[in-house]
Image 1 (cartoon, rainbow, N blue to C red):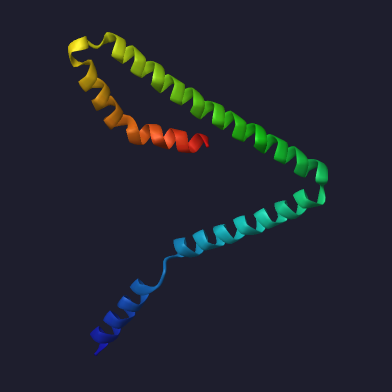
Image 2: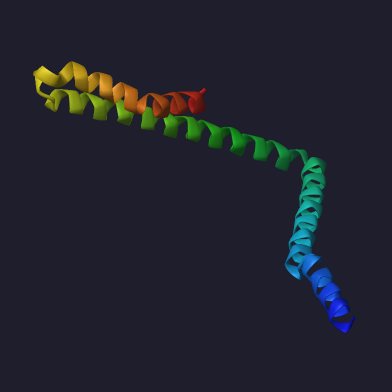
Length: 113
């Protein structure tokens, strides 16, 4: 009987969440409270709110330029590859290249728009 109680208690304690779970949950709650506090402070100050919006617009613009540059680099790389490809296999190389990178190119285009 003592073994049964010991086994029951052991299984019970194993089923309980660890203290890490509580620390993680508390951390998330604190993060949410900080977010709410910062949102309130930002909304109280129109100048800071406008500055944040301006910075966000510039950030988005720079990301667009980054993706555009990546797409252009991919195009130039493909052109260099085609220039260096023997004409006897050029059509096959183009088909393989487009097939291989179609998904990546579509993702870049989707990210830019």
